[in-house]
Image (cartoon, rainbow, N blue to C red; front, side, top):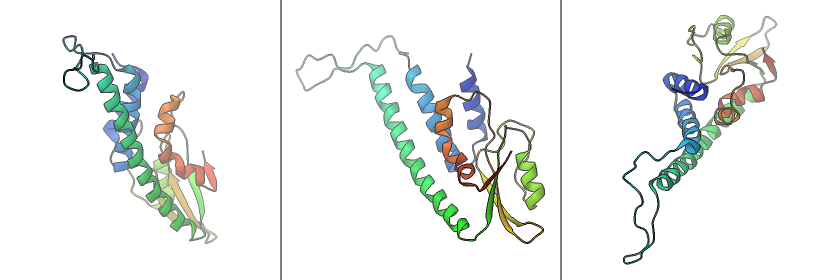
Length: 184
């Protein structure tokens, strides 16, 4: 039996294609798992700690698992920061072109990718399934009055998404944050 969060995480994990999406899924899974760690090995009580000859009790396996998972979370956050810097550089180069930026936002499976394909002649993945888009896709086109526009397809929203999942996937939503206009 798995809960709603685990279902969402599994869907994201199955659909993750890019490095950023895979890192975000790994981070969200690790943060989800940390408070849920249980001792699985009844026969492993404690490992001896300290220097030779000391009689300290050492660390329990649960403590070792928590420390290992915490270190993994720190490493994943560090990697995501590097990816965020690259995305920021890409955004700055687009901003220099004096184009209006629009972001398509809405619930998952609402047709955002279909609209992007229709308006920009893009060939992004369009499927009738939840979270087909896990990474923002940006395309440029001109409006009828010759105004340059960038249009970004964002990750779909889910109602009542747990807060720690929102923060784990925030880098994919940055494009919506910096857009001039949101198209809902």
